[in-house]
Amino acid sequence: MAEPIPGVQESDPTSPARDQLLGRLARDAAVDARNLLMILQAYLERLEERFDDPAFRSELQAFIVEAAGRVDSSLERLDGALCPDER
Image 1 (cartoon, rainbow, N blue to C red):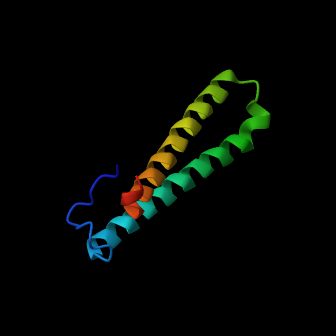
Image 2: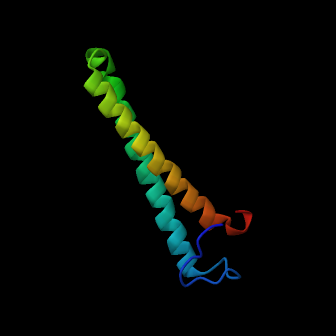
Image 3: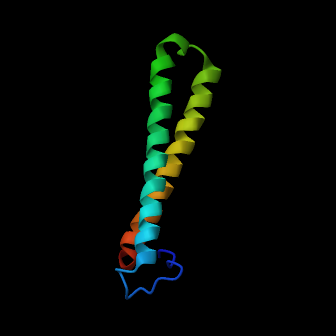
């Protein structure tokens, strides 16, 4: 079940507070997605020259997994705020 939106009544989907929250959640999701894409781009640019470096592969793998988790969490929060009754 999605967390309630502070200061927003469930029966008021047009609340300015709800719009602000949705905007913030959408921005957070966009930032997290952009960060993940930047990590992937950096990894791919260096992959050929550092493919044999196990520390490089391990470090970047950890960054990618962590960033993907942040994107997933951001999208989950946004989805929960957009469709609280469907959870």
